[in-house]
Image 1 (cartoon, rainbow, N blue to C red):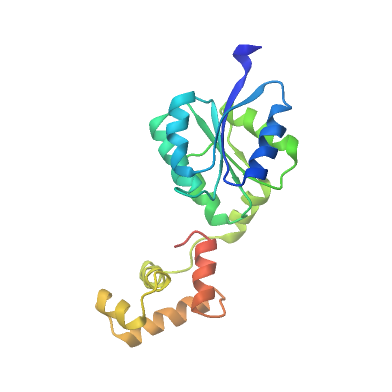
Image 2 (cartoon, rainbow, N blue to C red):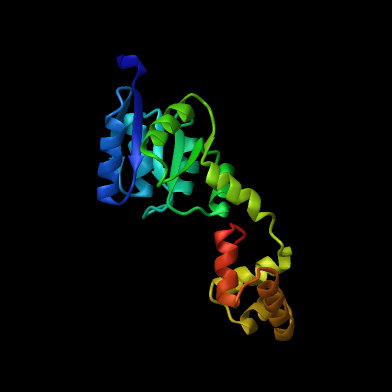
Length: 205
């Protein structure tokens, strides 16, 4: 049996959730949590130390977000597969996860047995995507904004005012305002702040 044990590194910053996940995974005879970390910037070091078969990583971690940590882990320890857990059903997050070559992407409110199965499937080389997330990504469609509109919105999201954006992009303030108005309309947003939220949730910023 020893050779068949799947060794798991678990990265989750909320102690109660982490404890519950460890308890849940430990109920399975073939799964063993060999390392627990609460910060994203500790994942790679811990993985290089204990050489897990899979890292189960929460998407929102302090120090370094889960997707960035997963991408680093793929570079430093390619033998370790990754399964991302998220409470945010954002289609943009799924697209970023696929770009980071994670093996699986699961919502935290999935049934408990689904997690154990997902761990086994990802270690076996399959790609596991929560059906709800996959549907959301398909429903979401492509970014309706032009590259210039996206650039203007990204600067606005970083806190730049219209005059500053105009100066940096060699545009008139009126043109920048027109871009922002178009963005709000295209995204069916209530205002600029809402447009930034919509674009971020969709992974366009």
